[in-house]
Length: 101
Image (cartoon, rainbow, N blue to C red; front, side):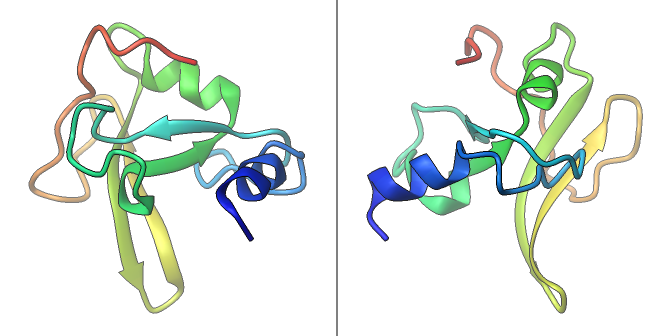
């Protein structure tokens, strides 16, 4: 599947958000922003629901996405709510000024 077809599939509403668990059209979120090397690589992309995306980009953020991890249950998105302990030691809030799409 090419990149264009993959994006269309993610926006189709047949996938569920890895954070909320709800099915619906997903939006592409750049975990570490767009100014990092290989910003379009899978390690930097999380497909999440629009309402979760708004919470990630709220000021201050309500949800912080830490990144991806390979687990015994497959690839999992690591995240936590504001005020909770991070899952990983290198968690950092998103860059401000990064506007939601």
